[in-house]
Length: 380
Ligand code: GDP
Ligand code: MN
Image (cartoon, rainbow, N blue to C red; front, side, top):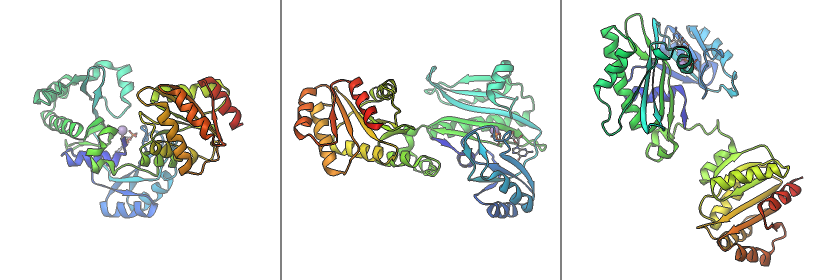
């Protein structure tokens, strides 16, 4: 789960990383009020889950409330690479002498957190890595040893920060960022730019923060950050029901058990000349409630004209899935044609159960390709 800048900064603040005072605003009037409260010059910052907002006109300096209101009007509704701005962060403006970059990510290859630090901040880190790789200092942290003060010293000295006052503040921020990263179960915590003000104060001017979805159950405060309005309403419904679902643009609804089979099902529908309406993974089970939940999500999409139910019985038995499908059809009103392909454990019994009950909108096909062709035909 990606956090907005202002949410990441809230976490930074909680862990003692210096950030500027600010307010959230969703209308120009709120932006004006925020600027009045903050006083002086403010920055109007678009809150969207994509970087490079500055270049796209999503970051605007404003001299007081009038200008803040005016800039807010400009920035709200702006489309930044497909993300429409609905929320603003109005922040007390900072004077900048230097822009540094500091991040910590989880390096899956090394199975360790990785710090990156450079004095060439303010621009995209990929650019620094490509054009000036020597300026980028990388350092892994052994998770069993945890954070040690030498890590900050190594980063700061290797990057060539020679002002002792800066060294001290940055080292302190590095330690706090590690704590924030670990305790939030983050996958990424990036500060770009980490600025030095003319007074020599170091602080986080931006935040890019990603938290591991699987850990949200133990971070109620972070889970609350989730912006359900930014998500697709069908995907929100699926999340509510615990269904793994990705909305696509076609007309053939897809339901498989297991992510691999569901992916192949999407492919085979394309091979058969159709367009998948979604990706949906029933997971390991095939009980009636699971099937009802998945079908409810899939049929909530009005573009769906047929449903392809693709099951390979391993631990999940096809007869159980067949009973689950019938029970689901009894419990809910579905007129959309459903094509079923059952293979694997107890497939024959499963097919027999479906053939005996023979609901009018249910079609059983012997192979994946046959079933895909049928589903595509029925969706036409
Ligand atoms: P990004 O473009 O999405 O990464 O957004 P940032 O929050 O990093 O802002 C982009 C740039 O805007 C920064 O690198 C700064 O140069 C500038 N900027 C942001 N906030 C301030 C501020 O308070 N004062 C000044 N002078 N510039 C700012
Ligand atoms: Mn930035």
